[in-house]
Length: 426
Image 1 (cartoon, rainbow, N blue to C red):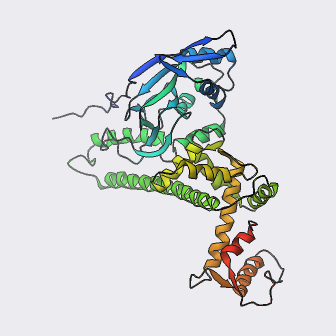
Image 2: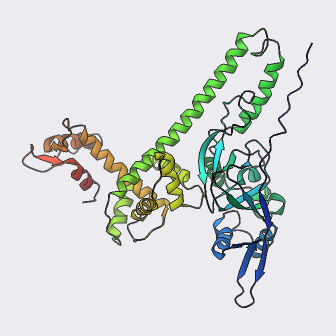
């Protein structure tokens, strides 16, 4: 007879080692007291150092002495393309900041059977990170296993920080609790609604037990109740995970549609009326619409710094359309998001909400009126427009006056132009 060994997690799976590691040294010039940082033969720009100091939210509360000490203990690591820097489910103790290159975040869903899934499978790609983005923070903050795998798309260089070297005043030390808002942003970044750590841990245990009891799906005599439960749980989890991803994709597709709309607009730069008009449209959004748009902003803002950069928007659009997007197009979208000034290179949340609100109401009017245009001519009779608008108005008001005040009710109206007029862009 054969006796099955008790289940033990696989120990042969390891994260890839860096192909090069360099310690960081800093020298101060007495002439200008500026710190110049060199990593072997690589010189780290002053701009990069300033970003690490003030752009990484976990370092902003450090004293100057704590930051200098932390940087002196940091290790600059280089990873070849295709390297797996982090593996989902493994314990983490290192925080990474990308200096050069690009990585992708991969997540295996809780519905995947750990006994049958190939060991090399890392899951679905849920995000991409480039220069100045960071990863590895969740495991350090929560003490939980890695929520995702990180694989390099191209040769990538990172500043790395060991948890033992991080001051207690930073949430990365694991000794200071992060805010709920920060934890929610991190969970969103790693698509935690797709991957449940506790659930997948339980799956390993349940699967092991099922293999060793009489009547398990792998035994000679199957017990229908057990087999049915395993199958149902797997299918339910799979459906939930797919549904979650589809909802996220739908929101991103809608945002891309709004960006395409804003690309066609011609704002009057410096006109405060443009900004005021968009703020009024934002005030007309429902609470659920605002919540959805904020979720989309968080998904695109992968660095969690409160703004959408050119690279972040470009990555989002490329993941949606599955094709390259030109820098010129992306920069034009970002620039038109804030009509108060020409030359913008990032989108703040209030500007993003303004773009979404304007596009949302434009498409609402246009698509509503398009249902009346049976011939797809682009025109509809004035009385039909008036009837639709009055019908909508009657749902919330007792006013019975006509909205379109013209004598010729059969006059054809260009509803594309009329829609723009309704949101104040004409």
